[in-house]
View 1 (cartoon, rainbow, N blue to C red):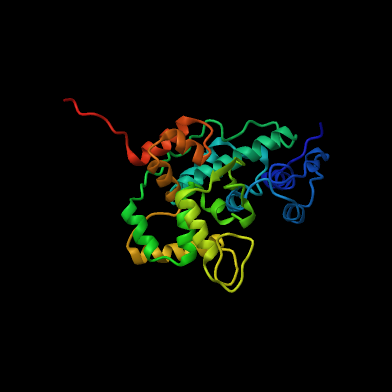
View 2: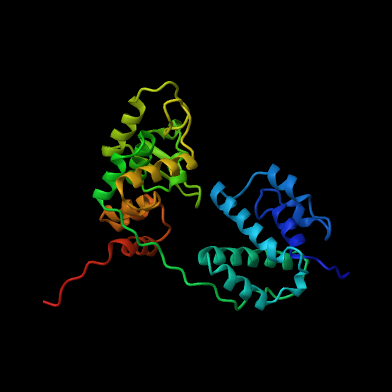
Length: 297
């Protein structure tokens, strides 16, 4: 095979133009050195990932390309990865781990597609130890934030608590998702599908939302008085304002963990959160509620 001095940047361009981030697999079969135009192709195709992971990957790529973008692939060694991790880890250890994972993914694809035969320089380079989030939101904390929140945030908090769904999945709920006596959800992160029965408090909350007077009605369940759906940015801003007024510090995503913990039934929590296995749910709950044990006597 003819030798070519490919850079990390050229491998990244090929990756961004193919099936890893898009539905278009044809670019991966193009001859070496003929990757599709990166930016136009990347932006004009449908993404496999949801908005948040895609946005995170773009930020990670920007950081990686600042350091490795013009280095020939063959010249990147484990010591360079270690140096990058040590420097990046001084300010953002979790992000450093994510960036290393993305680098490794790109490099593996570069090997598969013939950009290089070198070993992945991430091999043997340890990432930083991450501590799982263990914040449990008490009923009193939840109620204090809720009492200071905009009505759209109240709606989102109530739906999140009663369904145990992630913020993005709560915001994307449409009125047409409410049918046949259930609220039907397809999770962005996992693609899991579930129908949550419209009974009890959940039915009451949805009825309250539907009965609220407003100037316009949109297709989305959670919307403002003008019919505009609540965006993630608006949710974050309004939620931050409410928790500041309430003098309580927890994140909106912690409500999902509260829902899982408050059921008191691991089997129920597993189904509600759409976890694939019970161990995942057990760890999720115990990290926040702790494990209840009997005394010696």
